[in-house]
Image 1 (cartoon, rainbow, N blue to C red):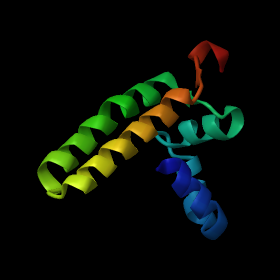
Image 2 (image 1 turned 180 degrees about the vertical axis):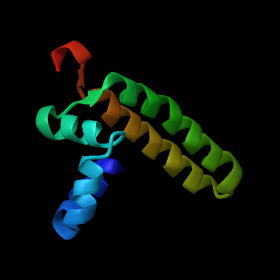
Image 3 (image 1 turned 30 degrees about the vertical axis):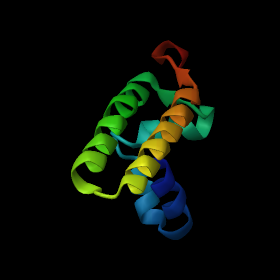
Image 4 (image 1 turned 90 degrees about the horizontal axis):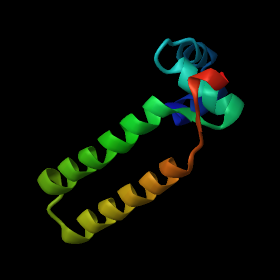
Length: 94
């Protein structure tokens, strides 16, 4: 989400773009992606753990329609496969 936000605001709001790029939490991850097309191992691990849990909560508690539940599960699986394929750079490589 932060990569998409940085891309969108780079085109519309230079003030927000500068803020997000210099943010101590999001900035390094975005710089890593822009320079090496990779993400830190910790961010990848956290995303791969939290994303299925978040989707499961949505599917179980908030979406009563079966075909939408299936669609969300498939979308989550596709996102996990995409995330799995993104390279990781170790700290000593920086």
